[in-house]
Length: 415
Image (tube, rainbow, N blue to C red; front, side):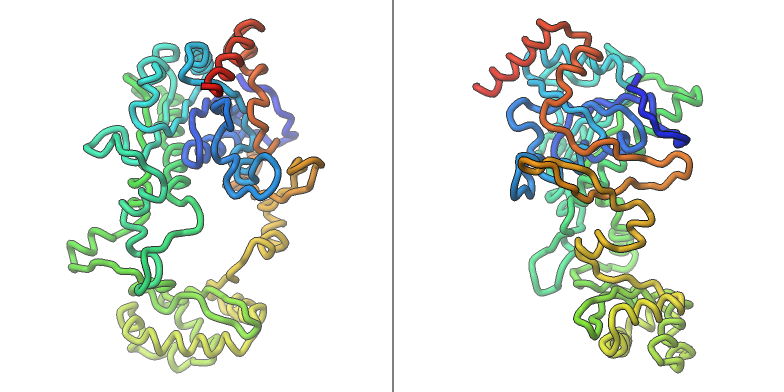
């Protein structure tokens, strides 16, 4: 069972659940973070030398990146060499008391180390195991290495992202990894619910998530459109084919606003807001196809209106008219926005970046569950910060075994 955390009247829905994270980078750590956000005890196993490579990503000063501090929140860090006998023994003992194991190694890696599903579930038949990889545990490509970038390409997302006259673009976040992490959590919780309801849990409880499949699932009717209409979607920049009018528009104060006026009712309200009630009542513009044929004209009308007003004026008018619109925010804008703050999506935590503690703003917890709100008890820990505690209290190691495991890790570093 996890340690008790005083949350006042708030009851964390996953308190009492223990999760063992055998992963690095984004996908498995993101999944485990969600468990930790809602009260699960998350034990993150890292290699002794350097730990998770995410600790170095986008780091301009200090020893640990803010990306790792964000992704590693609410977790306990244990430094172990999984290739050593003591490391393997420790993982097996931790798995015996865990509810969920989450990993994102290349398929076959854990099996090679004697830590595959057969070995783990021999210790704990009730264990749920989430396996995230580039191409899944089966299929002709299962043994290929895969990162979120290659998954986004293989799934078709990169082909339709960016400007039409330029190479394929990408979202400036690890979309493929985080989507896979979400599916991993959903799969694990489904199996846990099935068990709690007394359902059939015979056989191994394994969730197999492929990075590319998570991305592909987001692309809606990409392939059906090809079969039904012969449509091969191309890169269209900030526009979506057949979704008109929508996009990013410049404002008079040099900023940008994204406006979505593509449904029939919203289109009418948008045209009234920009001073064109005639177009709001134009019977020839009542379908997405018809508006798409006049996309350049409609975007020109909207642009002329936004360019004559400040961003704030645009947002106020569109809000009053019930037209979906939002500013194109950068990090400073997000950090000081009153709505983010009111919703608890900006949290301040004390972090030692270099030598002295500093107040750093971090993202809050999603989703909001009144009375069961997730929490950030601490940000990502230092490498191996909880090794002795976890090996003693959960793996049952004595002092000599802990010292031997640390020595094995040091030897792995030297070799």
